[in-house]
Each structure stands twice: as structure tokens, then as C-alpha cells.
Image (cartoon, rainbow, N blue to C red):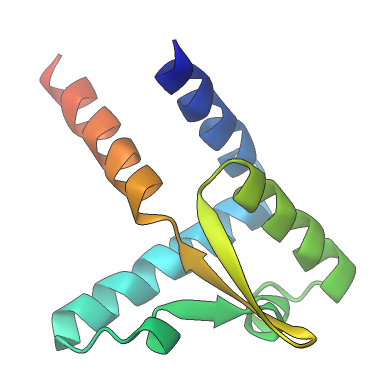
Length: 106
């Protein structure tokens, strides 16, 4: 049941277009870095300003969406003074991948 609640919370967070786009940006970045064979921690992240630019929305809105993604355990945040970078939560990414893989086999 715990896993179902966690998955439901993740789906709820991803049901907003901006949050879905943010998550997809992180997934795309991850795939590009894996393809290049050069995944360093700082490269596998997005900053608040990068999301603001990509989505054309303000800092308070991006911060709200980041908070929702963190609460759903889809991403984690690293703070550097007033700057923050967002990283994929690999455990949740794997759980989502397994969920969709098993759904296709059913």
C-alpha cells in the first residue's frame, strides 16, 4: 500500500504541465549525459533559473513546482547559498520505469 501511495503522489505531482515539463527536462538531460558517457553530479542537474527560462515562468512559480516535485520524491534539491539545483531521484525514476514496464506486460 505504501508503494501505491508514493506512486499516486508522484502521478499527482506530474499531472501539472509545468511540473511534468520540468521532470521531462531532467530526464532528457540525464539521457544526453548517459549517451555521452560523462555523468558528473553537477552536469546531471537543472537550476531554478534554467527552469524559469525554459518554461517562461517566474521564480516563485518555479519554486512552488520544485517543492511539489520534491514532496513527491521525484527530485531532490541541493542549495548553494541563494542558488539551488534540482536532481532526479533515481530511486523514484526506477520505480516509475518499473511501473510502466510491468503495465505494458499486463
